[in-house]
Length: 159
Image 1 (cartoon, rainbow, N blue to C red):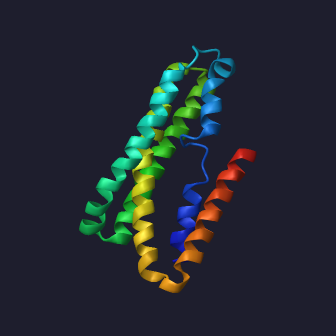
Image 2: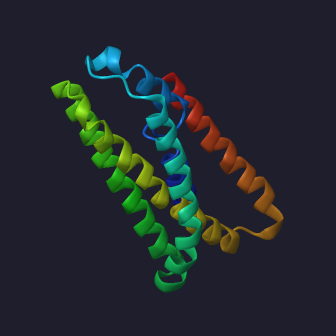
C-alpha cells in the first residue's frame, strides 16, 4: 500500500488544480499575456464546475470499482486525471509561448474535467487502504497521509 499512498500524495502536488494559486494567476492573466482580462465570473464558473465534476466522481467510482476492480479503477482514474493535466499543461505552454489568450478555455476545461479522475482515484485508493491497513492503525495512517498531502499542497505555494 506504500505505492498507492505515494500516488495519492503526488496527485495533490500540482498547481494545475482549482486552487488559490491558479486563481491568482488567472486574475493576473492580462498583465502577463497582453490578452483580454479573464472575467471573475469565468473564474468562478471554473471553480464551481471543478467541484461539481469532482462530486460526479463519487457517483462514477462505485461503478468503476465494481466493474473493473479497485486496482484497475484506480489506475484508470489516475491515467484519466494525468491525461487531462498533460493536455492542460500543453495548452498552458501554447498560451505562454504564443501569447495567445484565446486558448484559456482549452487550459481550464481539462483541469476541471481532471477532477473526475482525481476523486475517482481517491475513492479507489481509500477502499484499497481500508482493506489492507489493519483497523487499529487506520486513524493514524489516514491522518498521516492527509498531513503529507497538505504538506505537498503547501510546497506548491512556494514553487
